[in-house]
Image (cartoon, rainbow, N blue to C red):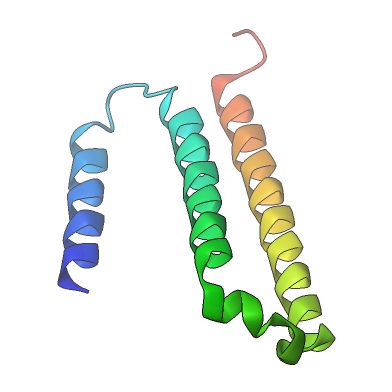
Amino acid sequence: MLIVFGFLLAGVLAGYLLRRFRVKWIGKVTMVLIWILLLLLGVEVGSNRQLIESLPTLGLEAAAVAVVSLFGSCLMAMLLWKCINRRERRKEGPGQ
């Protein structure tokens, strides 16, 4: 857990030091890394034999909660992304 907090603190420090520079590519890199992490999570779940064998016993309700949570998270992330981009465009002004 300390490693996670260490990386988070390093990211905050890097962001603080780089705040004067326009880092336009960081959003694209973040999205690519999130998709890679989701893919790797799926590979890990799919390769877990015990988990795959117990899927029928988990029930339809658990699967529904997982699917709804996933779509809800994606929807909220997309809305937040649009809100932030809209706010950035307003700051830039109409003439730019």
